[in-house]
Image (cartoon, rainbow, N blue to C red; front, side, top):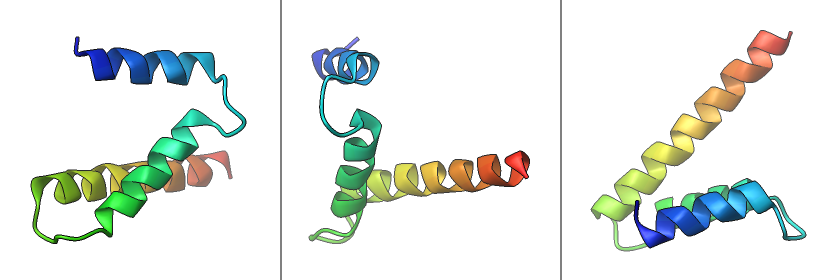
Length: 65
């Protein structure tokens, strides 16, 4: 496993910050998905992950009702 993946998973498990780590990661993905330059793989991947999260949250809300 890469060092960055280990640290991210550790941060997600610890939750030792004033904001939820998953929220900060989502905001960063959202920001990056809107950033310049357009057409990069990083931006495309950030957008795809952000949309996947939004869709899963939408489904979870629908299932709660």
